[in-house]
Image 1 (cartoon, rainbow, N blue to C red):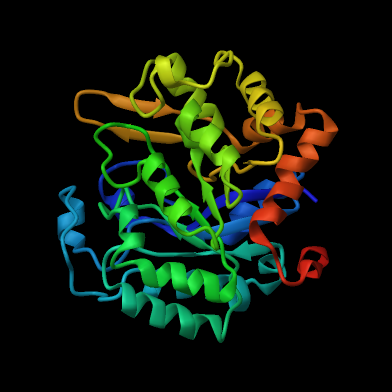
Image 2: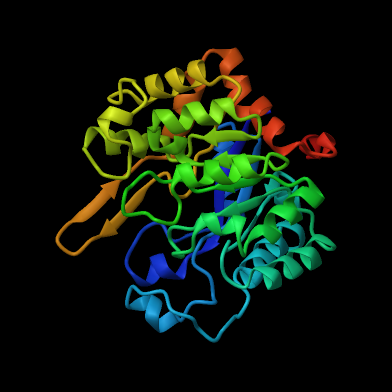
Length: 324
């Protein structure tokens, strides 16, 4: 069973309004392209910008409270779940839906909505991307502790966007690890290979309740080659030949064989943005992401595309993976 553990569905108004790409993906597009690459199942969650932010402010590149929705992701989570369970149930059966949350804003109202959704639509994990919405993952130990309680009650793991960039005060991998240390009864996956930070990867290996995924792997390798600031600096970087993304993935899988989960980050395996003075173009394809993992020896490939993801999920009923 070839599982892709990191995929976005829906539309992102902030990206669309500010000229960034990608900004949308629907379920049929994901499954059609993924099937062409031999993928069997997809862990899916909504895009990041949500309708609690003012649309006019988003168009100007700002995040300010709006009037369309009051509970973060209430609309986006239900919209995605309806697409999966009601609009395309034949394709939805091939997914493992995950809901997204804001760890800091209106947390009690979010949990109330998640409880109501869970009575109607199964979902299997909780997603956080705190950087883009300028929230703070550390809030999980304060006003967002109700999410840890919710996760423990229903045995749901987290998958959390991680960063090591100094100017990203919201999603530091080290902060996620501190949350994981304080909540040993909850499981966590740190996305994007902790941006190749060796100390953080080693700490993931030490903690029994943490994993990491390699989502958007090839453009992170490009970030190393191009000297960009969103990856770990040389003195903290996992040692590998970043000219060859497949070799990097092999090195990660050999070093952390029980901790690495494979995910593509579709459609964000590419990121293209007009930054005013230049266009940042980090481009990959689903096929190229899959080619990297296909190059692994069979035992490691099975671990990172199947066994490790199931260890993180701890599904009550794994027969849902065999439905067609």
